[in-house]
Image (tube, rainbow, N blue to C red; front, side):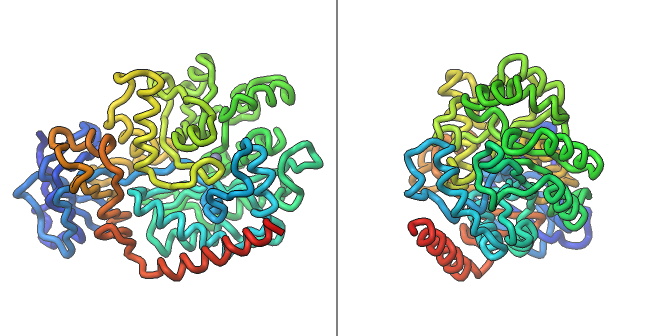
Length: 466
Ligand SMILES: [Zn+2]
């Protein structure tokens, strides 16, 4: 089925060997799938992939018996801090705007400790669910809150997760016709200066980078058109990516027509965002012409199946977007709409929603896996993640397809992976280092961090209940 790329010519043992998999689904250019396969890793990179019998010597071996091995899943949209207000009872039952109005005052308590602890727990949750690279869209920056994104990056680097935080922003408060209170919005100059500071301090453009920054006004209608334009210009100058919410809700069309005299995606284009530098969350409501424009620009889409379902947003035209050539990744979104953060759940959701909308021929599990890996990498502008090939970074997941949930699923491990389950990672490896081993987080700080998380969430709840 494949030509082995053996690493046995290396005299020295490799750093890590993932061995004995039922199947390695490489997602490489040839989409090779290797029964009984192994992956060899040195210095954080894949140095060999092959079939039974050609395994190199290794300093450390991770057994993948009974497992499907895939590239690590890439999460292209999230609001991690919202895990402090998951399933928040005072806000349940209303629409998105009600939910936001209830929670903005609660979130105005966000500080470095809360950002660090929520990121630690959120990133750990993602790792347990087979995610190796995640974005985060942090758009609440309360006055005096400190360096929130710096605190998140500290959590990611402690856990060993690959992290693309985006510098979110809101500049229109209630007094300007926006939704949030004054305490959580900033002015344009302050936002841009902090954006530039974060890029200069943390953004790493190199192959295998563990941290990259993108710029991310919350949505084209929570900031001024001027800030959208200036953000796009800054991203161009600093050569970083752009992210925002777009075409998530039917009401957004009416709002943008009334406010700007144009549809959301026209406004997006007018403020200079129609580019392969951009990827947008949701995109449930583009028309045919707009799908063509997104494809011509090369703008990516973060498809968030659980979020779309819980919030009742609608069915995103993923078949049409992909057929037109739009890069589509998957995202779990924050607790505005999704209270669990598992990229396996999102991949399965993408499969189910595509088939609900377009019938059984509309999608197979391999396409959902492709969106969760290569599609996510394309949204983030990376070619070094999302596939297992010699030279790519060693981000991979061993998914155990065993036990009662997978009994009888013998004919196609990739279809079984999404049709059976649920399943979490047995091992999650990021940059050649296990973050999850044998289904357990490698870090021994889980209980301590859960305690700190609970203390913050409880204090916020008490404050919210008055
Ligand atoms: Zn979102």
